[in-house]
Length: 271
Image (cartoon, rainbow, N blue to C red; front, side):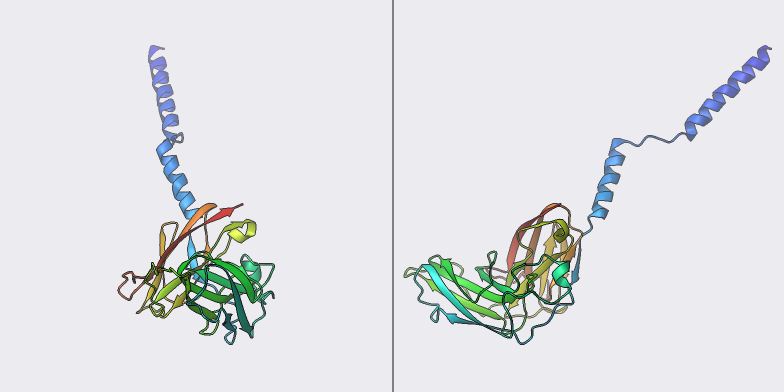
């Protein structure tokens, strides 16, 4: 009887040992946090691709009629008057992209950009702008209703504005130098508009190519090299603040000096 009880005890101990070895192991907090971080990173993978499907408007024209002399402007409110040809301001752009991207209910418009600061949108060809004293770099171009710029040699106006009697050219502007002008994304996005963000910019006095000048886009720390002057679509962005930085580079990947050739913006995405 003693021998049987001893064997039974050994069997019982062996059973519990096997059961314990087969039970799932509890993951450490560190492992769980690492896996969660990896899953979150995978879920928020940012992608950048060329946007297609927009009407070209290759014959659209934007021309500045007033002010006629941009070198002797008084500081304060300035009257701007443009002529628009082969393009209808205030009209919705006929493209599937109008539903894919954040779209202005007011229709097609002009992006007015001073010193590569965030643009103001204008839906009529004549408007007033408060311009401070100084020497300024003006870029104005036609925009589709979903804020994609019209890219042809006649759709843009580039001017140096000298405002005030004591104007100082702090940026030493060279209007013929290769220049990068930021346009989109801009501001705040919510709901469906957060799914696809338009990345758009203007390049002046240069072209982009695989073997030539390029644009480096850094989106939330992830780098993308753009070798084609075209609108792009950003997907996979997380909610909250998103930082976009654009830089104009030469064929060797070095920064091309210029007061506007490196620009950073922050936009906000909300549910």
